[in-house]
Image (cartoon, rainbow, N blue to C red; front, side, top):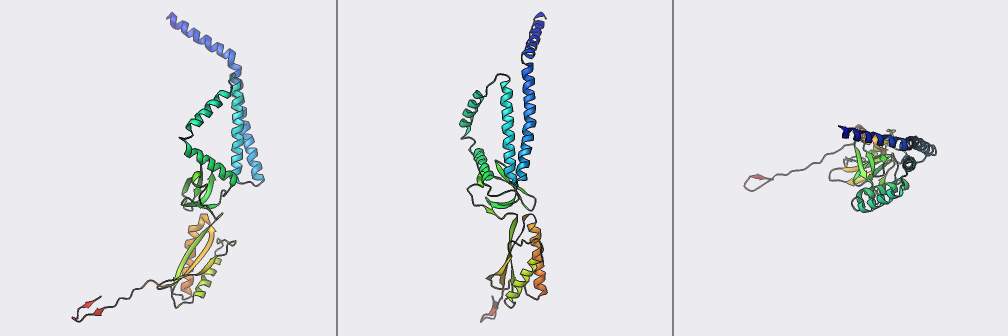
Length: 280
């Protein structure tokens, strides 16, 4: 029992000695970290506000604000460690060795971060643009260091690793998306009249972009129809809905004008043999 009491007394004495010797250092370190956190957030908000005021890209603005915040927090941590007499040099050396050793194991994530930095600084696209890359298409919702988030008009979000964007063929149609379609008319109809009807129908929709003139013309000559093709640009977020409405309006316009929309037909002839048994 006496040994347990002695052990407890030694523990209490150690705690008291620690509090006496390091209480102010611990308190100072905590205060530095708290002040550093508030200062980092405040400076990040100021940088972000200035960037938006000067009409910088939203992605670049977020990147600059995050960089400032991380830098201030890191500086606060270094000062806090200094309160305990801890220097950061050994940690930097150890971290460098760890990073060097793990480089080959994390080449994928590192290449994503490098590609993300290239996208943020080079700005081949910005938030709100419609891009097609790596076999997918959508509106850019957010650009991160590791990946880019795309949103489709159906509400699906697509995460594309940045290393699959940099160095690949990229299609950027800004805020609009190109819609292509075609309708077949009979050879007995007037193609010029059909083209004009399609063009007038497209002009009735305010969503169709005016900076890109719709294109309408004869695409090809089929077996049973003249194929009239049309191409126009609409906001990506409503592209499907608008294209359905335009297709219906084109159909009604052609029917009202008496322009026939044919369907494929086959002619079958029955040739009688000498025995009188018909055969195809």
